[in-house]
Length: 307
Image 1 (tube, one colour):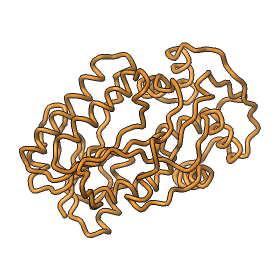
Image 2 (cartoon, one colour):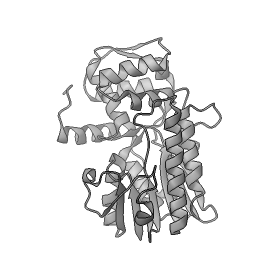
Image 3 (cartoon, one colour):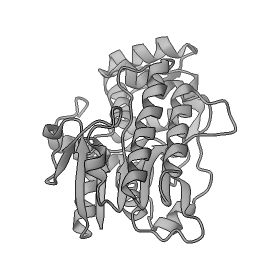
Image 4 (cartoon, rainbow, N blue to C red):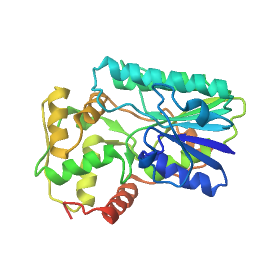
């Protein structure tokens, strides 16, 4: 099968390509900077925002993965951020229609559509809706925080635990979610290319780990697995902009990534159901096993300051 993976230089895209190749598929990539692509596949240079390169990249493709997110230089309340997200999805959708792509697979984020959505989460939902309508078959996977050595969300939490002698967490520490092992994300994405959709040619599935944890509990479990002594205390500050910028400085991360993530922590984000386990045939790892694996992978490439 001819498969296109966009966002090939990112942590998800680069991890997805090898299992697709092992399954015997003909895989090509799409990236703004092919020099950053580390997997040995043909790569088309292009940009979803301008549409450059999309027709060439999608020519003859059966399945196209959309793994592009416009987090940088956006900020939670920046209208340009939302406009870029929508424009990129629309450009890709139109090119996929012109090329006759049979199936699109999209990786988005878990949302609770019963609540008022932040700009960040609303833009992700718009992208999902746009892509689900762009091909005869489409699968959208929604995930909470991915636990992996290259996941920026996970690395952010680890850096906070490493660098803060006292873990002062804002009110979002009580909100619950279902973090998922990076390996399970990749397995779900790989199988989404070939799963039989039957009478439901357009699917939106929540993919989630088996553990329901508050963000505070996640931080405590990471602390314990790092074998550190870090007391956790509640921090009353509810101003996301201030708390987010402080946390970004502590973790050495870009505020334009952290602010949208923290701004979306307004309540529980729990999977709608567990249909994905049966449909995609994935047995998800526990949170502790996911963290242990991610920390091991991390330490093989760079030392963890706390160990």
